[in-house]
Length: 459
Image 1 (cartoon, helix red, strand yellow):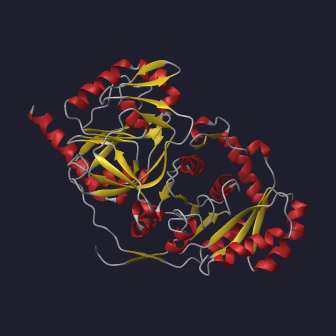
Image 2: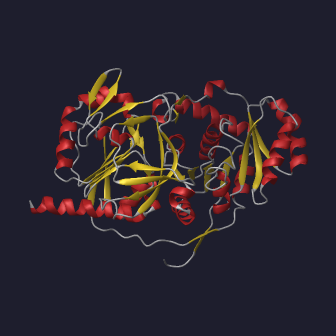
Image 3: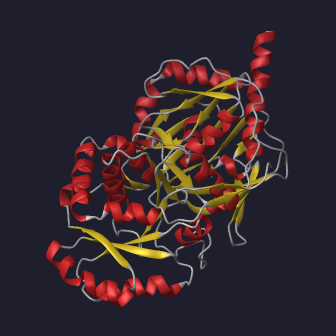
């Protein structure tokens, strides 16, 4: 610690009464429209979602980040906001679910909790379809539900221009909240969904055309200058910095393609801060691993590419042999599945890496969903027995050998179950970790990679 840092960060948090209000669509439109004003824009997503930040990143041409109070704690949320906003003219935060929807029956870790933690003015996105003066009642209810809601503006979605102009003054008079604009129904700009949320940005061929249309609409019907002025009223952010220093140089290969695309960029950055160079590779396309001292296999959609992954025999064989020889590996969810002997679908077993026992398959429902605390039962590549980190699970797949080297405990409840495989060189399991939740996990993984690198030099 080196004393409190005070940083001016113009910022807004966009929220909604519930899912389906069009938050991501509106936020992407505003992000691109702000770029058209030659501004440097930073983007963030409340909560653990991987997919919405991919859309932000595609729009602004830079990595969007997650701000998750449960996974990382409030002080780290402030640190990450500050770190990733350092060169930005404005930071745009997108809420998750409904504004007050937190863990269980609480507002903890909700978009509201994030807004009050980072003291961001809030813009509420209202789906105005089929409503009139009732919109004012909804807005006023959300504003007054908590005295520190900080809801200072509204954007009305899915309404015609004449409807918006007719009711704008009534809404402002009844609520005391400024209305900053509207979006009409734009069916040609709808984003498709899949079982884990929206289809990823990389899979939508016309995404840039869609975002261009959305930005043009924002420039026409949203008071962008007013939003900028509101963002600049945010009070300075205060936080305690951390002194993180490199442990030594290593190369970590990161699986990054359509099958493996779920990553918290801040986790990768933390590994880099400890000395790792992150080397991307594709299990779909690359026949060999890049030269590396460790491997990071994130989540994604390996089940959609089961046959193609199986056909890449040389990479599967090399990865299996390297891991057997002690190459440190971190694998979660889809990456964990890929390390298994194979994937079963419609009576067919597609061979995968085979570095860990078991096979996996898709089910017709969520197998695990929500926040958990992961506690190690054995010393391993990330931590010692008894150490813990917050995590989350969200998957429709399951395996016949999920592992028992950690215990996952449901947040706010007494439920717990065995989870993950772990040893001196491997962590592999379904739960997703954010390494800022316990930075020692990242440090220990880099140290394991350093030890591996040193052994290779000696050999």
